[in-house]
Amino acid sequence: MATVRAFLALDVSKEVKMKIMKLQEEIAGAGADVRLVGADSMHITLKFLGEIDEAISVKVLEVMKRVRSEAFVLDIAGAGAFPNTKMPRVLWVGATGGGEKAVEIAKQIEAGLLALGFPKEREFTPHITVGRVKSSRNITQLAGIIQRNRDARYGSTPIDRIALKRSLLTPSGPIYSDIGEVKLGE
Image 1: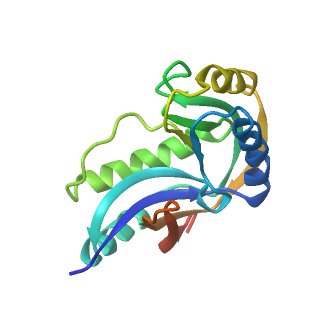
Image 2: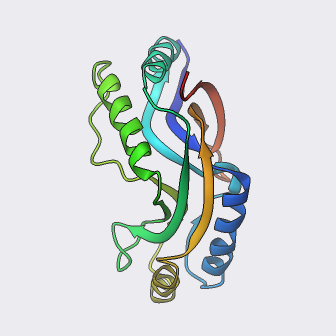
């Protein structure tokens, strides 16, 4: 049986993505060794599933249907790095207002997926990955940009569905497409 690399996500609006791209322009200007995420790939990952087959994807969709949450608005603000700005690996922007609702959705999904045998993740922090740091080149300049943007606001985005997405890895980066979705509040 064929498998797909999959994850669960919340999509964000085009307007928010455009504002995040302004931060990416600033990051690109630092001369740091960062692979920036394309606007089409910006989202909030709820859970990475890895390689799954079609039978499991049907069960994952059932877990998604059991999530109890109304649609909501998520405020996107702040910038940071995992694990920290001194040794950044992943650059991100955060979710503030409404973030607790995203956390609750992630907890419900986690509980349902544990029953299917998926491993428990560490604490979920709602964020949008902006870029991945490849080396320490110009890391000080990069840290300064993150620090200057730690309170920046990128707007609000309606969250009205959970998406099960396929991730196809290519030499120029991953390509994401929807496998299925569940509307919130239904």
